[in-house]
Length: 516
Image (cartoon, rainbow, N blue to C red; front, side):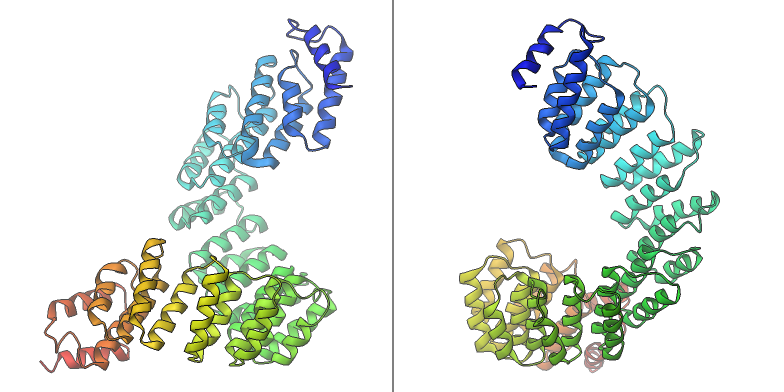
């Protein structure tokens, strides 16, 4: 039926607000709306529904809310129109349909609409509470999600797997450890401790909050960990810098007869790269071949990276040269492998052949030049970057500052410092330490001191402390022998507050303090 014919049908039924005068009209309009939905034309479908002066079957509203949810923020206007039409012609729609509307508003990014609709519901079920808790979770409001979680329990509705998963997802998004522990307590209370979905979420949260002992304990309590559970525990060990344990857990996964995800293979290979575990990497490569993962782009790129970082550039190149292996990630991996092994000429040759580059590709090449003090090549490469791309990040700037330090070129360093300030990179600890190192190496101790006490005062770490004290010590100018005792006390206080041990630069510093 054409658009004009359909419009005429709707106009003929104007004033009939409960049902169309001709049943064929409702059927024709419904069919047209469904055809638009099947073709992904949500806006057109909603426009037809909105001007129809009669109700439709509840399943059509549910379908519309579902498509609004999957479309996201671009469909907020359509979601509001569907909800308006529903309540206009069905003042008391079924609870399940209102729940779908709440979910749609949440997925479209309007927590306010979702909350308002929830508060207006004369009757609610567990799905209503879950819908709003999930909405708060997706909107980054863990405190409100937890408040609703508690209120739900007090209202006589028992939380289920969806409720706990939503609450934990909210906590994980903002690393809300205290709230996570409270939810964990309720999980145990309601007997969900061994649930694989909830247990995996807890492992994820505790791992992200750097509490791997608790994460491992919860993982061991899961009755039947699935592929996602294993991927999470491997990933969290990797992020904690415990590559060996990540590899162990990967092999335990096979003993449990669980098929790994491609991401699990990738994480295990990255773990091998991090500790130069070539033998284990070769074993994982063999397993990947047997299970048909070696052709996957993510796995093949991780294999190239693993072999390159473990010093086996021949194997890395062999995988790279295979058909369908050359995406931007694998190109970057092979460039980085040659660059960091000292073969920067070969890395540059490959870099120049890259059909597509990203910021990581540029950083990989520049890192190779800086690692082997090839300052002139690095400067030429920096000018190439300047004329070719605007895509730089804090790592790029940190590497450029290393080049300035290597050349003792404080004027170039000042230009970079100005760029950092103008483009909002001042809060980066990586960049801050680069500035401190650059000014120190160039002998500009006043500027280094300014960077320490002002620019990176809120982000200082051990690297910052070592850089400043070592530079003073190299010049025979610790805080003690320039009589900057108050500054020395500030540094000492910073060390105590942040739990630093007395490693070499600090011992040298205090040994000189004691001479006065």
